[in-house]
Length: 285
Length: 290
Image (cartoon, rainbow over all chains, first blue to last red; front, side):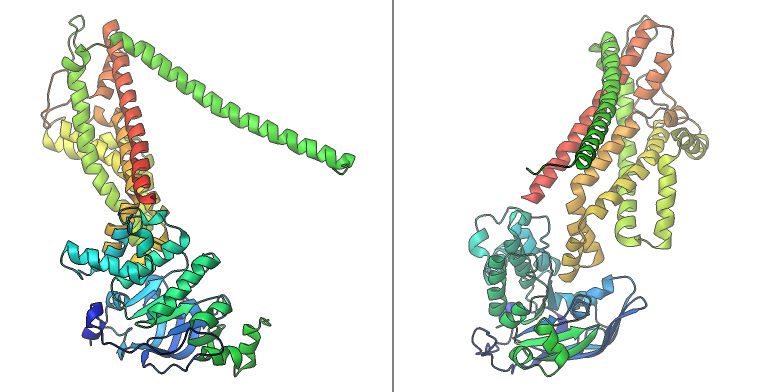
């Protein structure tokens, strides 16, 4: 049971064929067929007396991008933070129900939240590189979890992570310089590379582009589309256009309840509920 | 431009006038502070230079008329301040880390914070009496060690307070980022939060050192002072503030001059520490900020 939660090197991952879906457009996305990675089962979440999530059920598929949309305070970020037990760090926060990742209940007593967070990376709204060099930012996770045994392996891992985050060419000559000296978009790719360095099975993104300009946003979105070939990605976004562009599955939340979830094109083109229709068309009251 | 009505213009001029008066008052207040500081420094240096010579650093205190210097007091101060900082600063830092990263708003942390604030504002003579009770009487006499202990107790709450304040300035995003990468609480503090706050904490330590370097009252009942050369921590030990205290009130002009020189040395030392702390802060910030 615990073995399922320990990080595996990238090479040891089973080679799952990437989905053959073309670059996602609202009109032409194939239905997601990859297996379920995370099963969210009757989740209720509380901050002190206030209930933030009401009986949420959702299956998050592997090798796809799942977008959580909804107005501020609808609970989408709360659910995201349930997935890597980040709510544990908030005093008074409480979660009921089951979240199974690859069949393992991540909230069970035998599971160490640290192991969960090692398997599930997270990217925050505001880029948050540590105040250290670009190299040390990437090396932070591998060092903490002793994933490599020598400098050469670390160099290789740093380069590979930065390449996967499409940042290598921009920073390869300044690896020793502070990560805070990069632009906002580069910083966000740096923290994505930092998360990738520990080979997470899932990456959670909490409005990763809301602090970025359109060009940097396009970079990140292209990166997300590339990463989903090997990873399960969950993204919280306020931008409906972004959800439509990058996700295959969309879940719409309102007042702590999951209103509707399904293939992104279905949600945007033919939502089953009027409430969803009202939100995505901007007629939301 | 459109013609302003008389009422609008009157209001405009009134606001401009108030703005100028307020600005002027601020400048005057700052100027007054600077003038006072300048006068103190001028008095200090013009008087201090009279007793200044190489002998100040090479000779110990002597009988009136026999020359002598402050070498034993300088070394005594360095030992006691150094030892005091070495004891007080690490404890203070740990208290600060506890308050900011572990205890936070818990009941116990609030009590610790409150007690620390009391200690911070406790009269330093009280600290001297306290150490007299716990270290001088039981051990059978005044000692340099007791002096260092008293200074440590004064430095500790200062360092604890600045450490907590600086750690609270470290963005929560760093902690979240480290936790999300699977770091444990102690790793988050050791590898991310403390390095990020290093420059600020170092500044706090240096300022605490500057503060205890000038303390007189806590040393009166602990290390007592010593006119002879002694580096024995179990014996009474000389220090600059005590030397100043004893010499300044003496009837001998050369002792009074040496007291001024001693005060000048402390001031220059504190000034150097302040400049160092600014540099250390800037250097660390520069390294981290790219």
